[in-house]
Length: 68
Image 1 (cartoon, rainbow, N blue to C red):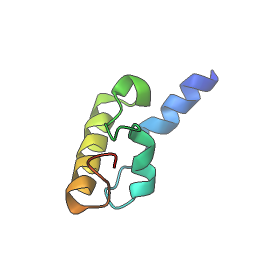
Image 2: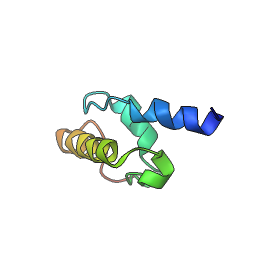
Image 3: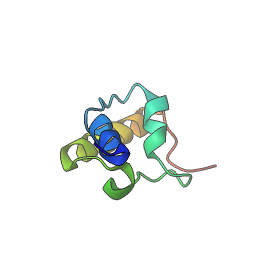
Image 4: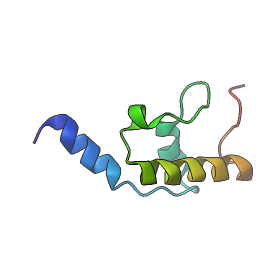
């Protein structure tokens, strides 16, 4: 197995929780935008879970909407 393939497998089993803002920050750009699936190398189902978790964390106030 190549190194890239192992990283993709590790990311595909990632558990997203809106309460864990430190892990969600890895998937947000400097402009506070959610990274695309090509940058995160997540499966479509996990990308949707990630987006939903980030949006929930923003609404609650754990993550910022804008980069101020």
